Length: 411
Image (cartoon, rainbow, N blue to C red):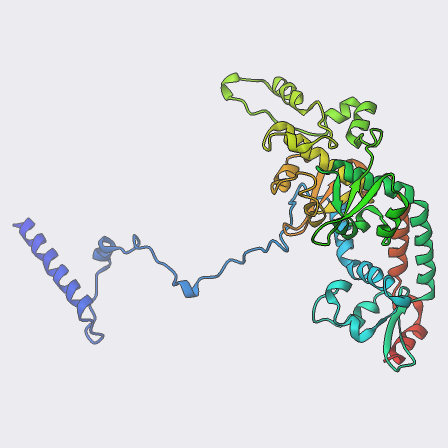
């Protein structure tokens, strides 16, 4: 009897609940007692925010996403890259202006050359010129047009740099010879060397200077008009890499420079010391970057050691023992490199530091730098560049109000 009443009450409640849901009436609301409500909880339902109201996650761009993260990030190396960004306008404008007749350029023309001068598109070039009042000056010519030129102090510095270029000519010739000796066909387009000349301290007019060394170089003009420089004679004394020199001086240090891990099954049960010895066997002997990379199986261990050695030697030839990805990629075909260079170098953290952003990363040769992030051995051109950067950082305030008024009167 009691069971029948409970069943009847449950059916009656269900009917009233269904009616209230199908025909809601605010005047006669349907109320559920707290006791019964506990048996009809809606907590199991999954609530979902409509798509248009969801907060969109900001995807970090490869242009800004750093390559390194804590705790591997090196402030010393990253600061050098920040300095590169800050001085981009100075370096590019100095190079561009130096090649102009009489080293001057109309201000109206300069405003259209944002890519060549290294300032953002849509920005006024005057703002960037005024950041370096000791280097650039703006003056009104007799044609009543505004022109850009170097200051007298900067002209003197350019003469000093020219003397350094002449004094270092023999060393730069050897750098080009070594680059050709590393290339697979012993030939490199002149345009590639020219584009990367600042990386190696090669003078702007090196294409004309090559004619002075016929026993080393031969320039060939191909059917499409491309000028290519070829190696004339092979020098075995130059075909010795920095890694090989280091191995002869400090064998233990050279052994620890790289890691080429051996893939093995866990069933071997190797202890840590045994695994280290096994990996060390594959680290040596060193594969010379002056050997023929085409003869090696593309994905073999020897081929990877060869490519690592090529990058190491390439960086050793640069002024600051570092290079951006666009510098390396330009010689990709000549040096038998692959598109997996980034992953390859990332595995060699003992010798290389990868800094900057994912879109424009830079690789440093770590052994060439001291603990404070400065180069251990500085080329005379590097010393001059640091002097120029310090000179260019002098602001208007340091020069005095008179100079500032002179600039204002020019407009």
